Image (cartoon, rainbow, N blue to C red; front, side):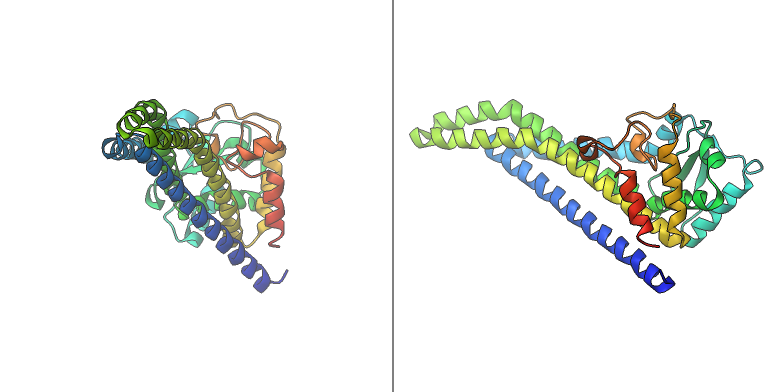
Length: 308
């Protein structure tokens, strides 16, 4: 593929991913609005519960957002990279940061032979890129550049902020749905008794609507959050290819990381979504794909090689 066509491919993929991301955020807002509407209709607690649920969800995610880098690094047992031991890793990171137009992130390393990496931090000024020792040992320079560029793209694209917004919306939906199941029955009975015969039918319908929304909304919200996460992985892959101008480097890196049999000992369900490839499980099953934070590695490699 010519340089001009490749450049067009980079921007086409990035633009497509952005449109799909905006559409998912819009659907999130619609779902939140539906849950609030159902809650107000089926309970008497709307004026109190809705702002309370919003406040609780924002407060919980706000604390997590500002402390996320410290929490994740502690859980992962990561240590600052020794520049004298890995000068080329530092040089690659500085060069990619310069090309991305962001400050050089702090570099950390996990003492584990399984190849993997992640980025965290609330903004480019407070970003962290963490790699395993296995990643540095098992990847060549071009592959390592692709991985660092992928993680730098997460930083530049404010994916941590976007994930925080999604988690906040999921939290609001989960809280309101739980409260709706608890309170709607009593509120529905009071409305039915106060409305007479016609009110019985209306109260029953509203109660049924509230129960259906309360049961389905949290599951739908969680699936939407996971789909958004998968979309951001595609976005970071495309942005990395744009930064390095060599999509094959990241494609080869993903192929090596996914094929490596060694488990990442420090990974857990709380941090797995951050890594460039999910370190906990295979992603081949249909149901696994639906509930994963990462797209299947074959799809990511195919998309990258389509940019060449």
